[in-house]
Image 1: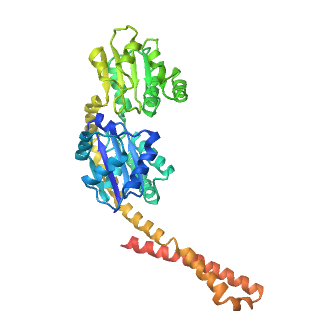
Image 2: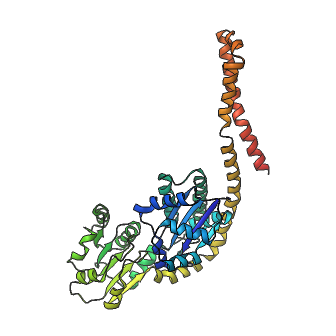
Image 3: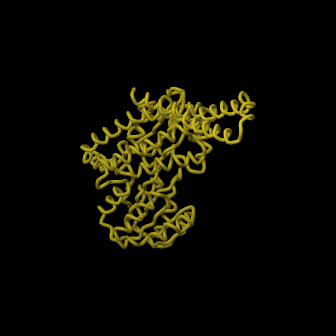
Length: 407
């Protein structure tokens, strides 16, 4: 694990609004990761962005200090002002070698999450890795690491009660909505058709809400979610022209600026002065803060869910020790897996070398003697040599693994 590194910006040390400034949209992700690889000594890399964390998992021979973090953030080319750059450098969480692996395992098991026990983080981690893998940013090393990460998470979720009666961000948000005693016929405008809004929409439908309108940049995705919820689908650009009534706005997009501006909000109110509900789960927030100053609004966003999340950790505290033990066992096992993989890679040329020796013997050193043999003898000789070749290839690998196991 010598070269494994993690640079993390999380809810533990940085406010969620600031973390939002590091969220990378899908369209620019490949170019930003390629820029990091070209400007820094980074071999493999993938990016994880959720509602409460932005992390970069990568391999590098360099030690991670403040200078490296600065060069890393500059290479990301996010257009960060100097004050934000300094804030991120001062509050970054850095993990190297075994600590990096331990952090990845803990993250996949939700032990580092805002809500301990929520399983979404494992799916998000796998998706983040697969996206970078398909784009060619990861190789054999991170493949082996991720296989163990997924294995460990599954063991924790299976053999502990850490996810019993899970409390996810979505369910926490729904709980806050229910506290307002909203009737099931409330008109709900959903801005964004991503994973979070899909889950929340389905959650609301499950609890008898039925009156939905979905707005999204891609009308195709809006229509897909509208079909699931039996709602209406619109392009995001049509939001300011919306003439229907509404009681609740749920918004979660990947935009870096406010999507729900005060101007748009005033237009869609259409003179209605009753108090509305805005549930904003985006990082950074989609809601213009002037709306909260100038209009009657019940406003719910991720920061307001932190206290519930804290109680969630207390409820699951007894299970943490069991989860930690599973993680510790997997770290020990993984050290052996890594050594075995190094041997496999080091010996990957053995089969070709043996074939070269065989070809030299048949076509060079003993070519004349073999030519003088009758056909049946030649055939027998080839079968004997082929048999020995296969056995020779496996022997050094088996012996090496035995030595590793004993030691």
